[in-house]
Length: 153
Image 1 (tube, rainbow, N blue to C red):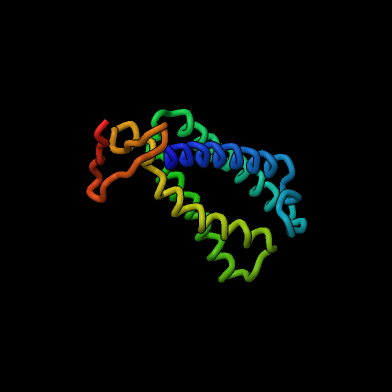
Image 2: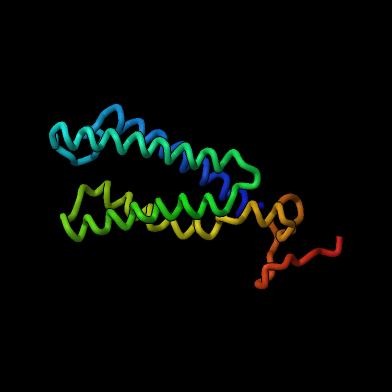
């Protein structure tokens, strides 16, 4: 169950990380953004609001992690939102210029993690449907046509 275990770990990690990051933004406002200077009360208010929204996004990841199997549709939608955020960063780079190095690192993580999450999205559903076999609790292979190859045991 390598893919399924990886999916569950990543979904939980996404949830906890988003909740933690969101709470930091709610509590610290602009001070939570590396390289940012004081942008005044309007931008501070906006950042804290979006921090709360990010907490909710993290809770949605955690809710998906509590399901068994983790629903692929939830992972795909949450990953699409994550990827949209990365696209937003890319647009910002093009319009506003190069941000703090940490924001660039976050964009790299977002663009790298999104395809992995899309690929893993249905891992637990496939195991639950019996499409994956293995020995010793490890995931086996799934044929290219989606049908499981059964062992002779």
